Image 1 (tube, rainbow, N blue to C red):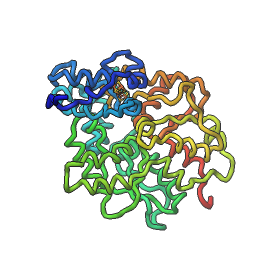
Image 2 (image 1 turned 135 degrees about the vertical axis):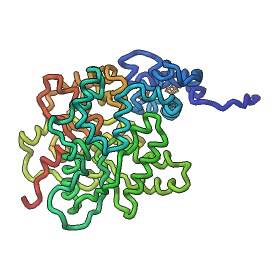
Image 3 (image 1 turned 120 degrees about the vertical axis):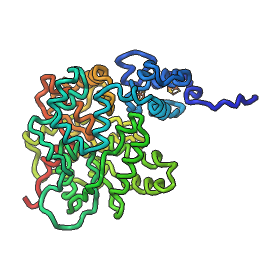
Image 4 (image 1 turned 45 degrees about the vertical axis):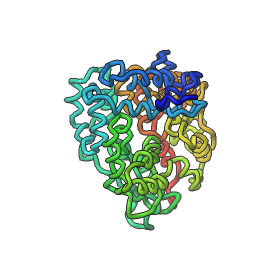
Length: 414
Ligand code: SF4
Ligand code: SF4
C-alpha cells in the first residue's frame, strides 16, 4: 500500500470498540460520547482551534483516572493526547476559572497554602456557592493558622537510630493534615525502629500542574523534588497515591532532559507506595484485640484511589491484606465493586456538579454498608469522601489509613 506520509494519531488507531466507554465514570453520569476516550480521540484529531469553547470543554471534562487506558484492548495511550491538548489551551482559557488557577498556583507554591487559609473568608464572599474551591476551603478547620504550614515533624522523641526511610509527604499531609505525616512516622518507627527522614526542601509533586497543562511548571517541581531527596539512597515513602503515581512518572516527564533523566530514573526507583511498604515491612497486628473506639474490625471500608487501581502494578490486594492483617477481618466492599470518587485532582474544581454526581454512585452503596470507617491513601479521595459524607447521615469517620492503623498498633513497650 502506498504511504500517505501522514502520521497516525491515537484517534486513527482506535477500533471504536467502546470498551473505554463502559468504564468511564464521566460517561456513566453524562452519557455523552464526547466525554469518553473514544469520542475525545476522534474529536481531537479533527478540532484544530484550541481557543474555541468546545475544545476547552472536551479537554477539561476528564478525571485522568486511567480506567480507559486500562480497558483499551489496543493499549492506546488515551491520556497523553489529552494532556498535550490541555497544553495548547490559551492562558485565558486555562485560567478561566478563578478556582482552578488559585488551586494550581497554590499547590505549586506551598507557601501560599497557609496564606490561602487566612484568605478563606475573603475568598468565600466572592466565590459562587457551587464552586469546588468553596467546598475545598470549607474543609479547612475554622481555627487553622497559617503558621501551622510547616513540614510535619516526626512524632515521638528525637534521636535514636538514624532514618532508613525518607518521606514525601505531599501537600495534604504537610499543610492541612499533619496527623497523616505523624501517623506514617509512627508506623515507620514501629517497623524500622527509626524516624522518617523528611527533607524540608520538598515541594508539591507537580501532578496538578501537569494535569492542568502546565508542563514546564511540572518539570520544574519534579527537579526540585529530585534535588530535595539527593545526597542519600534511602527509599522514598509517600502516603499519597496520587503523589506516588506522579513521582513514579518523573523519568517520562524529564525524558528529554539529559541532565535530569538518569536522576529522575534513580528517584522514581526509590519511591514506595504506602500499603505495599507496610505490608512488606511486616506491620504487625495489635497484641490485644481492636477495641470499638479504635475501629469496628468488620466495619472498615477501603476506597481504591484510581491512581493505584489503574496503575501498572494494580495495587488493590495489598491495602486489603494490610487492613485484614491488622483488623482481623477483611474490609467491606461496595455492591458494585470499586468506583471512582469523582475527585480527579482539579476535575472537581472545574466540574463540581459532575464530580458530585460521580461520587453519589459509590456513596449510595457505602451508606448501605454500616461502615464505621472510610479509609483511603489518596489525599484527593480523602477530601472528596469527607466533603461528600458530611452532607449525609453517615456517623462514622473518614480518615487516612495511616491514621487508623497508628491508632491501633500499640506503642512499643507501652
Ligand atoms: S481517564 Fe477516566 S474520566 Fe478520562 S476518559 Fe478515561 S475513563 Fe473517562
Ligand atoms: S477501548 Fe481503545 S480501541 Fe476501543 S474505543 Fe476506546 S480507545 Fe478505541
